[in-house]
Image (cartoon, rainbow, N blue to C red):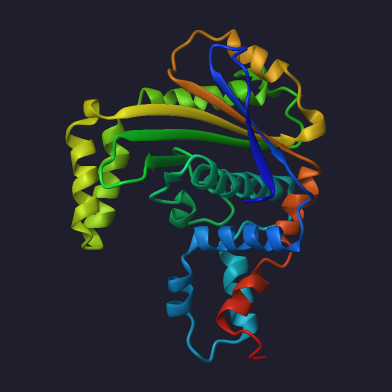
Amino acid sequence: MDYFELDTKSPTYSFDVIHITEKKKPDVVFINILKEQILFSYRPLGFYEHHFSPSATNDEIRNYVKNIIPKDNTLLDRNLRQGEWGEVLACLIVTYFQNLKVPINKLQWKFNSNKAVFGTDLIAFNNGDEIKDIHYYEVKTRQNPHKKEGNKKNGRYYISIWAYKSLEKDNFSPTSSIANFLEMLYFEKEDFDNADKFKNITRFPQNYNSYFEIFLIFEKNNYRDVLLDELETLPSKISPLRVTLIFVDNLKQLVNDTWQDIEEILVNKINGEKE
């Protein structure tokens, strides 16, 4: 993650604001890192290796990947690709800059490649033997964040407001449901130590600290302070709240470059130069 740098801004709003900017132009190495992270968010490498027989052809691998990633036929497809790309980048940043552990990636639980997975975008915990802190994230990736979104019925707001509204649901939702799912997941893996950690969260959620954060990933040239100004006008229902702004130059191109021929990464992992 040498491609980004973090800057904590002086208090201006009632919530904390973090700026993450590019240190250098993304190159092939960084784009391939993103490709790997996306592929292994859908399925871990060990699963792919188990799934394909030693005689699997390159085309068989390519077709498999194309059936689990979003298509690229319509605007909705491209928006879905952009959103999933943003969630993977956010996961990298949470792990690298915040030194937190992400126990599960929701992309693994997709059953329809062309539909988004609903629910909390990202959840993370402190590292160490004992979980004390639970972090909830809402991730939004936009090329034009300065334009309001929505309709006449539900209202039109900046993406920062929509992110807040989604995060607000996590704030008032019981922590126990996510923890119980993770408890069952680790139990089935016979990882009883981690299963016990999440069992305790399920039983005693009041003993844990909850933190809420909005990740806004956007085209650098289209950022406007109004995104945060509008947030400041909302009644404070989430505390503590932090907003991380990730400034990306030529976001559209970077997203497209990441998805371009992404299946070749897995072909090389599985078959190398076999064909």
